Amino acid sequence: MKIVDNPSTKELLNQIRAMESLESLYKFVPWANRLCPKLSEIFSDFSEIKRQAEILLLPDQFNETFASLGWIAYESLNIDAMRRAIEIAETVGAEDAEKFLADHYDEETLKWTILRFNGHPDCRKRLRLIELAKDDYLAERYHACIPLVISLTDGLVNDVSKHVGLFAENSDVTAWDSIAAHETGLQSLAKLLGRGRNKTNEEEITIPFRHGILHGRELAFDNKIVAAKCWSTLFAVRDWAGSIADGKKYPKPKEQVSWSALLKQLAENAQTKQILEQWQPRKLEQLDHLPNSSSLSMPEGSPERAVADFIENWSKKRYGKMAETLLDSVSTPLGKKAGQVKQDFGHINLLSYEIKSVEDKAAAASHVQVCLEFSRQNASQVEEIWIRAIYQNNESNPLIRGEEGGNWKIIQNGFSKVIYSLGV
Image (cartoon, rainbow, N blue to C red; front, side, top):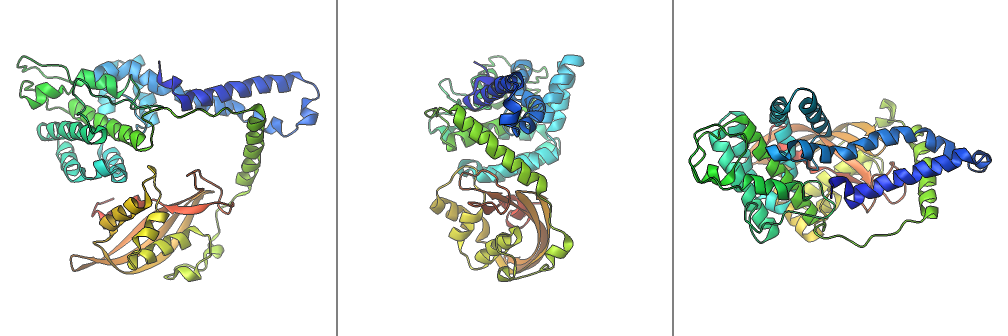
């Protein structure tokens, strides 16, 4: 079984095949265009959809090429990096492709991927040591970074599975409908990295053999390739942990979609497309209420109002209200999420704020510029940050701003410079 056979991927491919059949039928029946003229607009963009759907095949191609070398595909791995690595392996060779992949794990990639660890409790508690490992990696202290990342990965699997670590003989790091946790992914990688190393080896290795490194039998493990593979494995485990938190350990009952439902969805998508084509970002004169330091004097339903409400709730220590507004990709219970918000924001004393400007980036996304004055450990500080707000419904699906049933959700990463003292 391949990753492309995962239910969500397979369902999408089946819908594309169904669309192909419908397109053929539409072109074959002479009177179809008169009966359903709007379908021609949908089919005009269908070739681009099919082209983009080719990325669904990349994870299998990546694992087939690199899994035996210690790299696997995972949800948060950059698609362009996957595609380019495969191209290099096919045209130049695996050695150059591995160097390219190692270079991909640079300061920027580590910074943004590590930020995702804030969204999972078992990942979050390891952030201090992960940051130390990142510092060692960027300083090329691979001898220090590699054992630490391996041990953190092993412990994270142990905590999430509540059973054993990644390298135990009976470890199970599979999950339903997952890329990282597919049987050709982490499960296969764990067997490779967990191989016994019964003899002391002084030759350089390019695979992070856990037992040989931690038991002192591999004496030339400290290189960039091995270190990058350790980060890759840790990030894949983070995505597996997210799948488990999302309830994807076991499959859910499949809902059957009828042809009538499919056609209705196509009609709705066509209507959405029309609205999207008409959408325009606000002009400067429409933002004459900025800069501003009061949510009540900002337009209701605007992203800047949502950010201002969030900040004012922060100043009043209303952590439950803040938790309701934050984007949550793992469906954390509200009480637990409020506790996490208190832990992240509670040690900061907010003194004042000002919403300075807004950039409407897309129909469902805006960036809000905020100037914050706050104190931490009795020291005052001023920071200017950009907060991203997403307009979505209760099922976490993006909507076009103004559509009924939507709310602005705030991405916490924008506050990282303040609450985590990170230089982002």
